[in-house]
Image 1 (cartoon, rainbow, N blue to C red):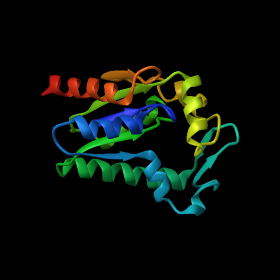
Image 2: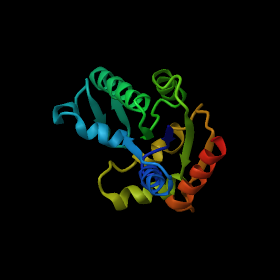
Image 3: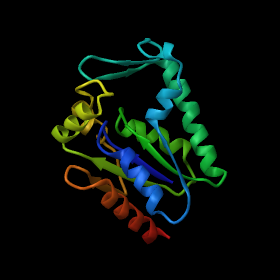
Amino acid sequence: MIVLNGGSSSGKSGIARCLQAVLPDPWLAVGVDSFIEMMPASMEGSDAGIQFAPDGGVIVGPQFRRLQDAWMEGVAATARAGARMIVDDVFLGGAASQERWQKVLAGLDLLWVGVRCESGVAAGREIARGDRVQGMAALQAEVAHQGVIYDLEVDTTHTEALECAQKIAARLRGQA
C-alpha cells in the first residue's frame, strides 16, 4: 500500500494516476477528494460536516470524522482483501492524521510518501484548477507534513508527476 500525503494541489492525484500506469500490477487509487464528493451536499458548510473557510482553511466536524473513519476502515479492508491501494490524502492534522492511518492500516506493508510542492507553485495550480478555495494550497503546503514520518519524499515544484511516480516505483521494487 502506498500512502501519498501533501497539501492541496501538490500533485498527489497526478502521481497516483502515473503510479497506476508504471506499476506492473493493477493498483486502485482512492483519495480524500473522492471521499468528500461521496458525502451528501448537506454536510458541506455544516458544523458537523466540513467547512471551507474563505481563506482556504478546512474545518471538519464530528459527523465528517465518523464517516472518514468508516471510509478509512473500508480502504484498509480492501487492501486486506488483496487489492493494491494508493491513498491520496491531506493530513490536515499532520502527525495525528498519520497516526489515524497507522491504526487502521496496522499489519499491512506500507510506503509513506510525502508529496511536497512550494506553496507559490501549488497556489498557481489551485487558481488554474478553479475548483478550490483560494488559499487552501498555501495553508496546507507545510501543515500537512508537520511531524509526519516518511519512507520517501518527492517534490513536484519542478518535477513532473511521472518522474515522481517512477521514483516511488523504484523504491517499491527495492522493498520487494
